[in-house]
Length: 453
Image 1 (cartoon, helix red, strand yellow):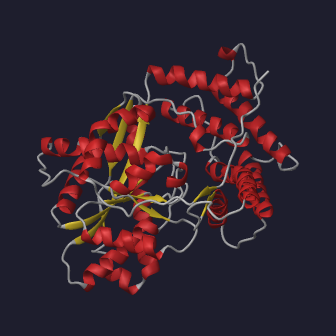
Image 2 (cartoon, one colour):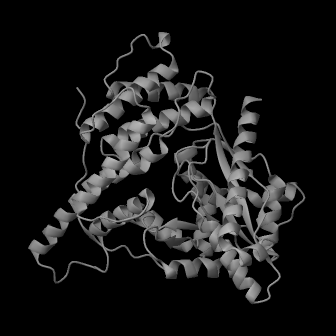
Image 3 (cartoon, helix red, strand yellow):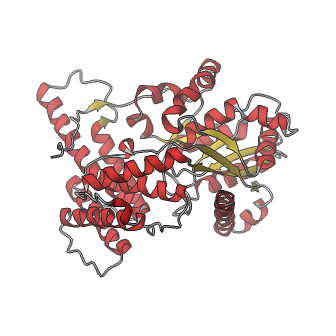
């Protein structure tokens, strides 16, 4: 008999305040010294290497650090730990590796990351201390943030450090496909190029595409089997003679069971004749509509704008905007706010379903799928079960890789495209977005080719 899934006790809190971003040499030193120990939680003893586009990476940094260019690092974000990994790698290893390749960097490299404002709400005191002191800049997903945008543009223009933005907008849960890209990084880059042109600056604005790939060894195979057994157990499958059941069938029966549980939850009549993706789409829509109904709001727009808005409303009932403390608020008012915070937390469970399931509309792995693909699918299958039970990204089960590969693609020079941008902004942004997606797909193809080889 399994223990019931433990729901947290949620209480309303005063608003989270973080200091204005700045670069503290002391905090940078701390990150450089302790960063690898922190990364052990995400990657164990995995070796972190650059394998693909080394000269593109080193020379992009050199141009940025010498003031020849302004660089935006457009990094893929499929696993969650990419900002921490890249921050440590750039601080600790990049300069040495560049020197070995004959590229001398004029100063210690560093990167300033852009992150969603909600990160400092769920990230705890460590995030609230570290992030503003390494220059990281918050931005709102769901509402106009002119202050945040102005801060980002100012940081890029003044340099010298590259600014890192995830065009996927959030964790995307999949490495071997590009489910969605937001145009923010490209749009910001063109706006910076426009401002520099107005100042008659000669430096160019460059987008550097980066992707991160995990590779697993014997431990990955063992951990994969352990995780799959755990998923089967919570789904009620014993599968004692697992060796006679193909991997694809094992994950299929778990996936379909979790799907049926969600259909029951949202009172959707399941139809086994329909494709999994179509049935999952119905759950996504039902979960979002349920959250909006519970919150008493209705917002027009696409699914992501509605989801981001609902997430913002939920966080704003847990961390109260404009409230610094509960002084002057009666006891009954405080406890009523705690009740509303608890309600917002439960509403947020529906948003977690929407968030994850949109990305989980992927084919089942086959027996021929490489190990990294099987591991990623099993991790996501656990996440499917976890979100169904009320969990969030923090409950994700990560299998430690043997090797982490960073791949870079040639830069996309937005200054060279600026005349086209002046003629037709929409077309220029669309073309740059297409080139960015192609760069990512090339990185994926080359990484998979190297793994198979």
